[in-house]
Amino acid sequence: MNDDELKRLWRQQNLGSALPMPDAELVAQMKKKMRDFDRTLFWRDGRELVAGAVVFVAFLFIFLRSHSTLSGAGCVVIMASCIFIAGELFFSRRKHPAASETAPLSDYLRAELVKVKWQAKLLRMVWLWYLLPLFIGVELFELGFPEGLAGELFSLVFNLAIFGVIYWLNLYAVRKSLLPLQKELEDTLASVSESSPSANG
Picture 1 (cartoon, rainbow, N blue to C red):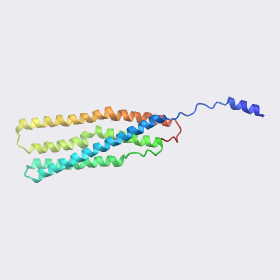
Picture 2 (cartoon, helix red, strand yellow):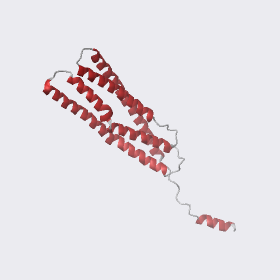
Picture 3 (cartoon, rainbow, N blue to C red):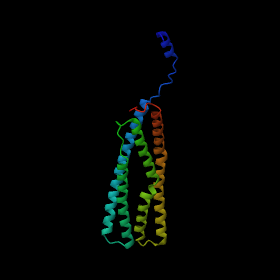
Picture 4 (cartoon, rainbow, N blue to C red):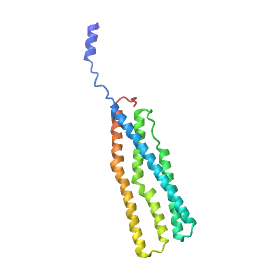
């Protein structure tokens, strides 16, 4: 086989299309969004911890003063709720820390996707680990004061409305912020998976 035949065979080869590379600008924007997301989580958790500490101290002060048995029980439930909420926030941050941007791109995106999904689940379940314990404590606390049936019913409806609005705001945040971010991460991860497995950001 001479050189001309080799050249002809080379030209006739079907090399196929090159593997698509992930868009560098898209990846950079995604990483920036995740840094902003981590910053938002940090300040949200910080506010919750500070608020929880203030509420804990306030109800500890009330508990140490004169109160009825029901109000005292309500204080204990509210203080325990503050500790539980703080523990849940700490657990979430330790379980899903910010991913290293120097990690392989696909690993980074998967870790961030898991974190966003967890935060969405946390907000959907906020009624269970956040609102319900506090609601029970507040109701017990208020039942310890003789307000009469009308007053107790008004307090119950008012508290249900307040806690209901808080729950709705959390679901709204999931729909408007977390689900679109989750979709962006999934799309970016899909584009990376179609490119070279060793692609890095």
